[in-house]
Length: 249
Image 1 (cartoon, rainbow, N blue to C red):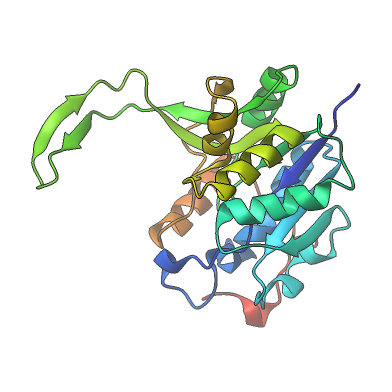
Image 2: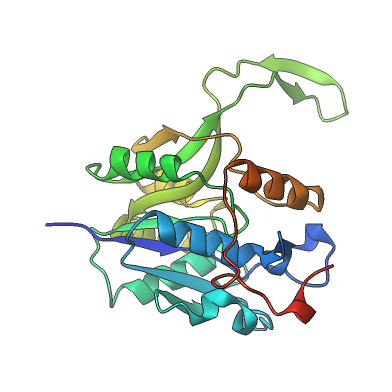
């Protein structure tokens, strides 16, 4: 049976660390919503069967986004936590997809995903029974603190990776993993951490580019713009235009 590929990009967060007047997905990079850049770039990279975007119940900006008019995108209500938003999207997909289909969950705040990384992720995992994620090897020297601001130990970094997104798992496995983790009140920092509790040792690490930046603090906006421009990406005025009076100055 051929498996379809679906996208889930949670957008229910409020981005408190940015200190802005709106959630960070609606800040602008190169005069375009971060959200629009991320969504439109991913949807151009692969023929996904569809895309689910969980939104905050009080979202006041989605309607003004270009993505709101994209027929490939369906929205749903997100939850207080990322894991709850992803689970809401998966529950919506139950009527559209099969348990064996692939779901790729991507951070909305990562607009710089490289197309070759996505292609490599899908190619490496498409025949796997569970799935995996993009990640990059830790290259800095790691120190473990004693809790009082002093070095207790220098940690061997050879087996450590930084988790990136997309994270790609079978729909049924990811849904069941999230449901069980949330029912047990287990900490879920990403989709892989939920799957690891149900299927330990089965998630595959696929090496990706270190410039798959997650916009978290104000300085990341300029860095993301630089990475996008360096990659040769240029926004289309017609496809990604934002109302001039709604641009974040």
